[in-house]
Image (cartoon, rainbow, N blue to C red):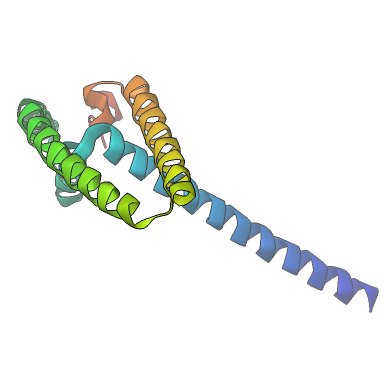
Length: 150
């Protein structure tokens, strides 16, 4: 009887540890994706979409290099468009915040402004951390050297 109890406890612990690893692992993956978007903006997400679309096309080493060159050449324009887009969003958010503050009491307004500032600082830290961790063109997954290809 004790053997069965121990087995059930072990199974429950194994299941619980799998749930915990899955939960925390998916949280880390989500945070990485958010940091990537924050740091690189829409151009980074577009590059990711293109890479996903090309993933299983059995590209040659030359094709991969040419595609990486195309992505490198077009990324500055994509980034510029993202910056313009970000400026418009910032204006809309400022207007939204001002309208919300007009509805709040003085104490609520102070708390709201403090929270917005905390979120802005957290956002900036994430952008700075991502900016420091960027490694150049290999961030898109350059193909392995020829001696590592199948």
